[in-house]
Length: 285
Image (cartoon, rainbow, N blue to C red):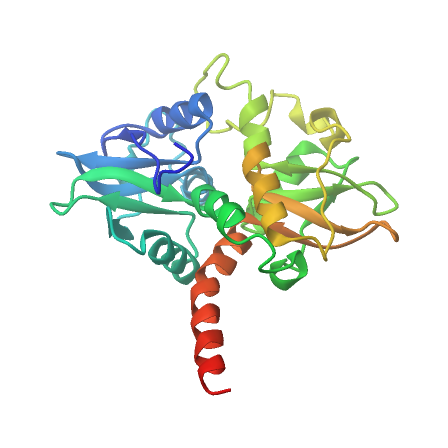
């Protein structure tokens, strides 16, 4: 699996399945997206973020097993044909261009054969390009944060408001204490233990407004420094199945940014052009 260019088989549903079905599939298989198929051909894709965004804007008050996926799936799919020599470069370039987390892989007839995700790109980057770039070359300076004393409800609102997948948790002095993500909420949600007629599926229980972030996330956080190898960051994320790592200047105990799998994708997309430019430059000198 680790040497494959894409993941297969792919978790799929039909357009007539419901939000509830997609969430259960995501939660039980630790995945972030489900491909919608018809007659073996991909016709849409649904991510957890798509579901969250839809429920925020939907005014019908329908519960999770009443909304069919055909209403929320994205139909403008970005695909590549399997077994092309520059498969990874094509996928990374498309991910960066369209700001998406995965590329659907089809055969010559348009049938679904797999999916390449940011995790796949990060895995190959860690193997192929150690020493190529530093973390500071691609890290993101803007970091969305919350305090460990904030309520879970507030943290979830911050994630939705800023259209992000994660918040870095700090104490009152600004020291990094952890990271909370939509996956954290999914993992602790009581909805999947005892499904009820509701639209609230991310909060652990009905009294979640009384729970603080520190009740869900303990002081366990992976960190990396700006001058560390970007390949090290990629390996760290893949090995620990996480999407981002806070960047800390350890001597000053100061957070200066965050590096995510999407940043690894950006680096991967630029390695080949950079290499070609360097080779071209050398031919003239």
